[in-house]
Image (cartoon, rainbow, N blue to C red):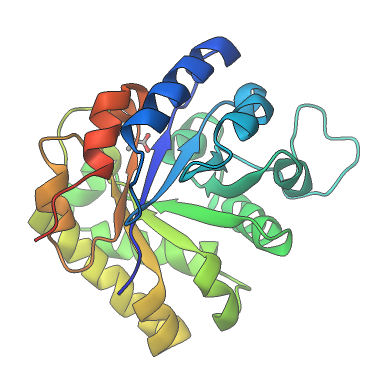
Length: 252
Ligand code: PEP
């Protein structure tokens, strides 16, 4: 069985002090949790401080972005090695907000994903369609293109460190989550596509998370789907009780 992963993306929220308060509350609420892996993606500025506060807890650290070069004249950027240095294990690549606001192309996302793997970070690779693309029935062709381009150069053996997050853009931050059936259709197609590219073991073993307005009220029905292996959570990860309830989803 695949071990589920519940990851919280804090985005542009929380000073170091606010991050400390939130993580300490969450630590208490997830004591004893061992089924899903838990990851938190705070702003870079809080990462080092949080690395001490999550020690000895089930909470892992995740970065919200990474640059693909190791070092050099790249003002403002952070390398995968620097993230490892502050105790990071996961990194989000290809989030739709970075694709849209910062014009990240599939090629850029691929460079980031490869750089993460090279340095021993586990990428959480986001894919997903716009509302317009869904209405034009282009969802599967869009996610296949993103997978094809984003996973270029990844070896079969590296897929054990890759997590895919299907995040329909129309569901992110809107309160309108995909239905469990809509999400499962895409997750199933993603898994079949991974089988076509990498074969049986990587396709079976790769975690495919759902993201987009995940809340305490919908996590159980999403997690009941056979191809949903966890969640990437934005807004609800900023409230410790809500995020803890998502982590403690009910199994069926
Ligand atoms: C996200 O930003 O990845 C996300 C899923 O946000 P939200 O849960 O707020 O929709």
